Image (cartoon, rainbow, N blue to C red; front, side, top):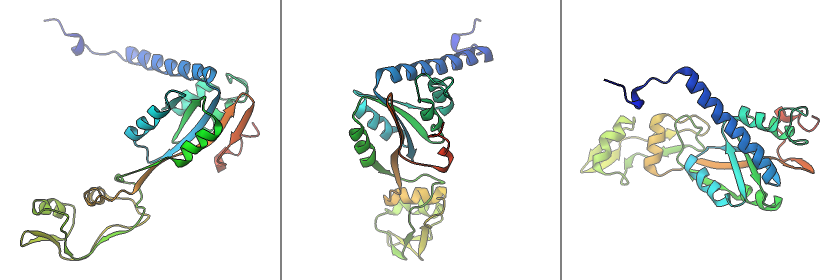
Length: 229
């Protein structure tokens, strides 16, 4: 019985070829965007939320193009040095694509870009492993925000609870998380149940490039070689 297309094994060479084609397409898209838009920005992000970023990107799509993914691929697209850069001084932008970073190609005025990025922030529930922004402690007594059906689940999260006449009750004070310490999976779940949003999704401008100018917004220790390059 012949195999369906879906059941046929994919050879490694085909997978590599598709991966290479995908990277080449991204490189081409970035190079075209550098030609099409008047300025380029590198930005960093904290507590990335894909859905929120998609909404942010949609608001600016008439005047801008965002690139987020492999820093290495973006660096190749721009050129990593003065010798292989695609346009003068853009290798300085390439050097700043480190860590949690992205690329914005835009026709918006500088002042508008700065205002949008400086004003943008969105709150969300913190994930396991992220650092607690504050100490959250629940005091002994009734927890009326929880229904009696939730008592077994809360107990599984390590909370010292019991049912008292149908009301969930904390039998002793309970520290959900400590400021500055990583959140456990249990703490993350409890904070979500409490409606406590500790993660702030923010975007920070790192630099701006135009054909006539290069501006560094944030001077990080690892970027000391950029302006002199």
